Length: 348
Image (tube, rainbow, N blue to C red; front, side):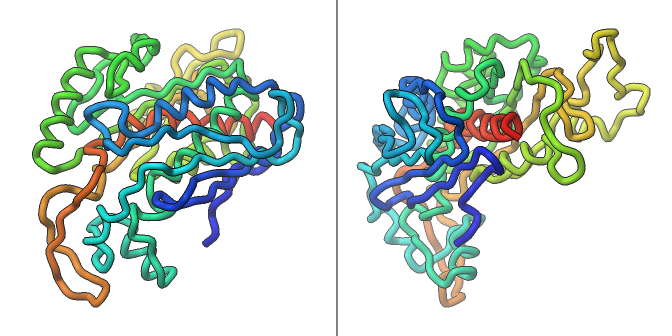
């Protein structure tokens, strides 16, 4: 199975399965002499971990990271940084009923057809639990570029949207509620809706907006290695992501050039920022902002028709512990993947 490494200079390779002994990773290309903030790393893992509120999966995991190499006296040595997070609360029997059947809109079918074998216990490598390693790598990446500020937040759940530009939001409020929405009134509506969806045995999708500030001019390469292309790849690699747009995004397709062009100030900044901080694939010093769309979680607690591994039509119903809406726990993952991209390009 290929495709387990992300990045060019600052690289992250992840390993492990959702219901295996552990999840972990190896970071290569991290410069020597970086003083690491281990509390910050654990804090980000705590933001992602299950069981943190009533609107997420109730799997109870401490998600404590153990570093195995590449660090001495709190500083990076330049050697590969290996780390591991042990799984302690698996309930593999929750998945015995899908051993021979495929969940609709899940990777069950494609994994089985491609590899001829499938870890049905939580999805194996297709499980969102793999993203723990991304959060560790992304938090170390953040510490390579401390001047860059990365703030992601939930901007919609179902049909409930924040109806304010990000410039009017107080990012310090993002962690004040279970949904991770910095607009408190909207957050209350989102949380109520997610709870209703959960009672119905259903799931719902949403979007996460990410704002990156203090980015220097010049990150990114022309043609195939454009900065926004790599950000798009990073976000689309996250479980359940179905869409990515930056700057004006799809709304820009409805505008005229006279409306869309960002006119310059004398210092090289622009009066507007519909470009989303990137032009020609290279950062221009303005805020980079983008939006990531997440589909509803595939495993639902309602009976659905599906097929088994013999191609026969059958009924199935989800069991166990699953997120009714993935976006609240995905906020630190989006930030981590953005940090991996920016740290990589800073080294390039």
